[in-house]
Image 1 (cartoon, rainbow, N blue to C red):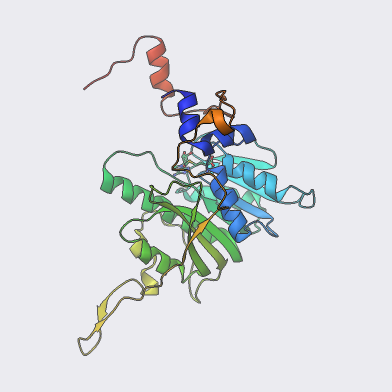
Image 2: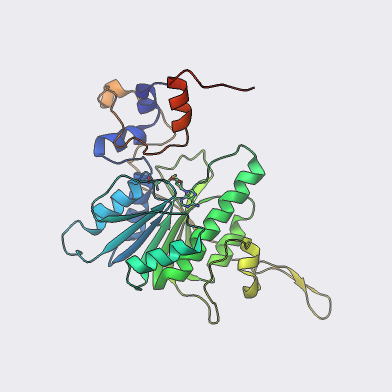
Length: 301
Ligand code: SAM
């Protein structure tokens, strides 16, 4: 598929290039912000799984926009290197590694964060159950890091996939935050299970000790809260598991373009194909391209 056909197929992809965003995901954060006013009074921000950097661009533009927030700090963490963005401190690191938290704390001089977001996605293996498990562990790592670094009242936003046990996760988050909402920006394709949890007002229950233990499963991480588990009482009566339901909100202006639709470029949009804003710095397919160029790529079936 050529660049122009993708421009037509996906107007957000096209608009991102026109407006200077490194990825179309920028619109998802912009639409979440329109709905929830996420960046108000925010000074310390952590953008997890940030490459190529469109969320960091949004954070930088929004938080520093009127020149009154010069002492704000944004840290962007990713396994991949990222090209520089104004006002953003890049950290090439693994969010599941405990040292990453220490490094962020050092950058913030021990101060806690007002806002932590994660748009993380692991490399897909194609094995559905394994992919779902790795994605769940990545969300858990982002959440663990957020609980260690957020100040009371802080906000956590993360990409999720609405799979089988997602209502259990909403319920568990409800014990850490005052409000938990599942939001679907219009820039996120309706046909995808992708959505975002917006957790507002960090307020863990008494006795909750934030920990970074990537080896724990989500169930083990929350087990001391005794939620999400059915049990029997002394009289062997069934006690249903405690679950909260997160409201679901579709966000983004109703006039926004539809991410599932195909638009004809010649009617409303310039039909020239645009180059990407930022080429990938170290994509996983870089070695394959080099080998292909040298005629040394062997494809095994
Ligand atoms: N929000 C980004 C933007 O707007 O440009 C896009 C993020 S991209 C969908 C997902 C990113 O998650 C990838 O860059 C990948 O390297 C990163 N990632 C996956 N696992 C990670 C980990 N354990 N630690 C840090 N980054 C990770």
